[in-house]
Amino acid sequence: MPIRRRGLLAALPLLPAAAQAQAQAAPPTWTPDRPIRLLVGFAAGGSTDTTARIIGQAITAGLGQNVIIENRTGAGGNVASEHVARSPADGYTLMVGGMGTHAANQALYRDLPFHVVRDFAPVSLIALSHVLLVVHPSVPVRTVPELIALAKERPGGLNAGTGGGGTSQHFAASVFEHLTGVKFTMVHYRGGAPAAADLVSGRVELVFAPTVEVLEQVRAGKLRPIATSRQGRLPVLPEVPAIAESVPGYEFLSWLGVFAPAGTPAPVVARLSREIAAAVRRPEISERMEALGYEPVGSTAEEFAAFQVAEVAKAAEIVRISGAAVN
Image 1 (cartoon, one colour):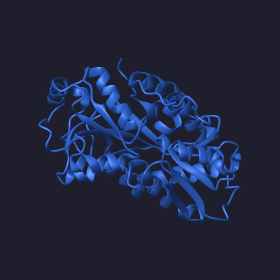
Image 2 (tube, rainbow, N blue to C red):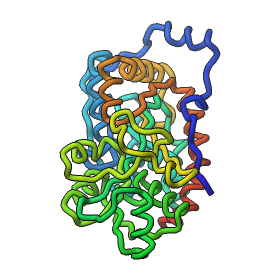
Image 3 (cartoon, rainbow, N blue to C red):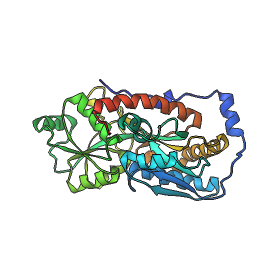
Image 4 (cartoon, rainbow, N blue to C red):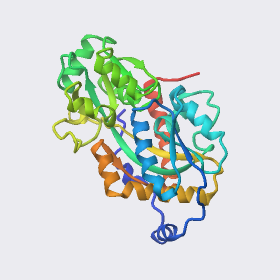
């Protein structure tokens, strides 16, 4: 079945205008007095890590404290998620999570020691992201139809690198398999950066990679872009077609946002949310994110909370399609 995720920005529930104005006008009631840790569940250099570093740097001045990025890899981001879920709910331990860590993992892992909704306080949806289907230059394909034909000639013969089971790379590839009838051999890494590195070296043939993770290598000619998961073409790569141009109904969007432990006081969440949203709206930040292939958002905490609940249900269907499950 097609996975349709168009209009996620428009689907975000909006607060009444008066309530939004009042929230934006309210003076901050929490001021941090020590550095804040912002955890990332994946390796340095991947899309989640890159986003965390952009946001962490952007909100440092507004908060008056350093934001320290801490990479805790493992279990599809669950190592970092569990640490944050069990941390004091005081605003000093946060994480950048996404569709994998804070939606799909609830269905993917049967014995998850926390709940992706109940044990976290959504702070702000930072951005939506698309994946770019890229291949090593040695792979003899330049279009989606050519890739489909080669994959059908060699069932399981093409290795698709992913950032780990249950990550956006994994799910984007699985949806592609579902709609086209091809079969890849999934090679799971502990983050998108190692997967991209092995693609450049030729150890795997293809990756459905977040654009930010491979854009530099594409521009350097080290990887060949085949298509984007966006319904329309990417502004940063207008010559690269959408997968949907060859596979009707294909669309895949992921997302990244900031979470705090459940029970974090509302004034703390509100202050953090305002700082993040304001940072994302700054032209130099939004332009930087767009140049990396993101669609900046910067939502309120309330909008992000409702968005996440809807995403958990959508992600469960993608998990079913992928056939993935972790004991």
